[in-house]
Image (cartoon, helix red, strand yellow):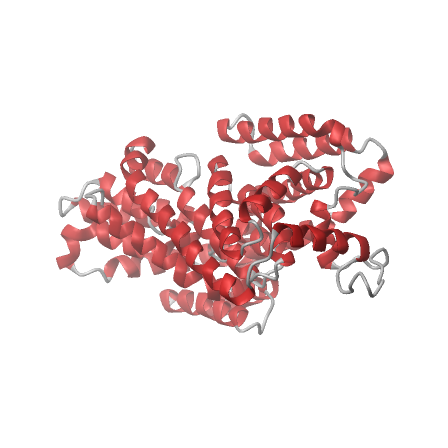
Length: 456
């Protein structure tokens, strides 16, 4: 019964948000609360929610201060050269823009943190997508898939979890998987090329000069009117107008004299994250406080900058705490454990010698419908034990378990995805409808390459 209710709860959530019948925050809170009552454990709902909030509180804190930090870096102009460089590379060609999205997301993903990757990628490319009137779900989908492939880096999380759960060395898991993961990344880039060609056919190609001229007109008169119409943008400040402020060379928040300080601060911050000198929430808290104090020494300016980013902070942190209700109920009621056991039990005995392949296939739905912790520490050891009985090594099982990460990064249980869709102003349901099929295909390509190369 728990298995059926668990799958029903997840299916209900996905259907409602994809059909836009409920907002993600409302669905993440109300649906698990309702199913908790169905399970007969409504009296324990409070405990489950508190447990979920406690487990995700560090993540919420990290996201809150990371948004403030990178928001400040955008305000002071740290990423302006990146935006202009990408603009020149892309030459206002939608195909190049989409390919550039995959490349930028993959490069930034080297820091091992999905939230950071999404914040930098969206910050750099959102103005260009809006200027060219490109589909924003392509931005979120391509960024999520590229980050999903790179999320398998030893310091990214899944590889370390697999190594810990099966008592293996992370390098022994990851290094042999590099060829298969490289094929997956190439596939994402090729897919980006195809999606970009589709956008090019839909929109055409502007010249760089046309985009820069339109950008200047946008800054001067505001989006929603034309230069000849004389409509000013100094009044309300639309979303579009705010988006294009990234490239405005005259915005008052720029701090050109502090550029190298901000660049060094960001480099030190990312290095500290990779080297794990301090917990990530602490690093971003310190970084945000230092960046705010140095770049905006006057209290009114600090308040203005915090207020400017309050909307993003509230949306993302609210989504994380709502997701805590969902995960708390899933785990507290035992639905996750029951679903995992059921999936393991339905594997036919004849598939025993192919348990690595089975694990790779199962990693798609399992890492999408549950957290990485739940999968790697709860399910993978059971699968590995079944594989060992048929002569499949734990290393093969661990490598196969990484296959589902491109799809996992768009799971409603991953806090970083809410940063992605929130900053890109994309509905989570729209993102899900677009990305699931392509991300699943990317996973299968990695699995196929791993099998072909004899890695899995």
